[in-house]
Structures are given as C-alpha cells and as structure tokens.
Length: 265
Image 1 (cartoon, rainbow, N blue to C red):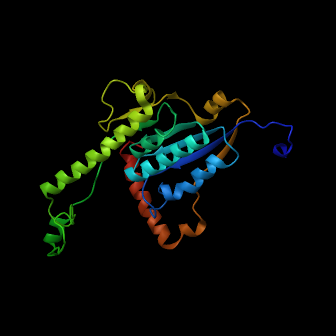
Image 2 (image 1 turned 90 degrees about the horizontal axis):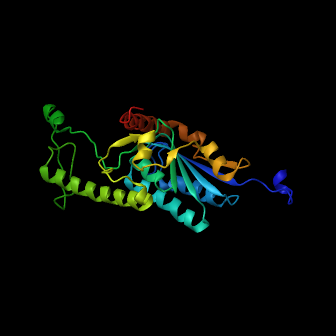
Image 3 (image 1 turned 30 degrees about the vertical axis):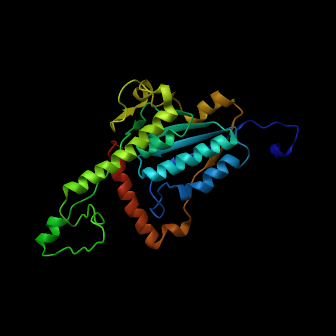
C-alpha cells in the first residue's frame, strides 16, 4: 500500500531484464530475438519510470542481426527515456552476447564470467560423400550462379568459401565498430577483435568490461539501499511446451548446449 500514499517517497526503481540463451530468429525454441524481446524491453523502460535498467546476460551469442536489433532497441529507449543502462554478465556474454552487453553504459562481471569472442563464425556439415556412397544423387536447378552457395549435399567450392569469408568480414567490421563506438578509450591498445575470450579481471584489464560486480549490491551502491527491483523475463506459455513445440525446444536445447560447450560451460 505504500506506493498509494502520496507523502511517502519510494526508493528508486531498477528494471532488471534477463537476456538468457542463444540469439536466433523467431520460432527457435526459447532463443532470444528482437520480436520476442521487444514488448518486454519496451515495458521495462516505461513501467514505473525506472531510474535505471539492469541487463542480466547469460548468452554465448548467435544471430548477428538479432543481436544488433535488440541492442539498437535498448539504446534507442535509453536515449528516449534518458535512463542509464548497466549490464551484468553471469556465465558468459560472448559473440552476440557481448554485442548485447555493449549496449549498456557499463558492464560488470563475476570473476569467473567469460566475455569477448568478437568475431563471426559459420559451421555446418558436408554430406556429399555420404549420399554418393549410398547411391543418392543431388539435383539442384537455379537461376543465378550463386543461388545454391554452400549446399551441404554438394562438394565444397573454393568460390563459395571465398564469398562466405567476405560476408563474415563485413559482419565482423560492423561488430568491431559497435564495440569501439560504445567502449571508446576504455579499450586497451591491443587487438581485441580476434575472436578470443577473456575471464573476469582479465576482461577488465583489457577494457572489455568495467569491473567485478553483481546486480543487487552494485545497484544499491549506485542508487542507494532503498532501491527497488522489477524483474522482466520472457516466459513461455504452457501450451508451447507440448507437441511439436516441445520437439523444437529439445532440438534447440541440444544446439544451445553445443554452443555453450565452446566456452567450457
């Protein structure tokens, strides 16, 4: 009832947005994407006129486009509402996960958090020898010589690899620009864009993060002991866990486990 009594002043409000899991376009299990996160992020910035936003991040990355869209939405709302944004990394904020973290004004990590992996990766399988061994032939007809680039059922072509690397370099350059724009002169004078990763204090030493800190004590330090928290997290409805959605979720869980495993998690 306290908030309904006009002469009693409430403590500052911090909206806590949890960004958990792989980043991928819609329809991919519990993956993070702009379409799914947009209503939640918009509500967090508007409801209760928060004094600050805290992003709690645990993501090994994923889609560059979705990472960029979510980060851009956070920055736009932060500037519109003139609200500071703080990022707190749990296990990992790597690749697209770090892209999200850099959307904040400062980044805090646990001493065991993994951050970085500022690079671009593409992985797939080649099945051409397998299907040939079983007497299966691949028939593909295209209008446009590059339409069937990197077909996993056909032998790899040098020109396809060259084209893919060119696309990756373009995305990598955008990622680097984003980090440099947001972190500025906090970055150490060394090559931080090789796709390497850092842990805790080492990440602070090279300027990828601002220090060691956890969300509740750090927010109390910045906004006082009477700070209030409002949590925002995507919740899947019960029906989405059944039937075909459950199968999709299981496949996504396997993919996500494989990505986290790249960081020893």
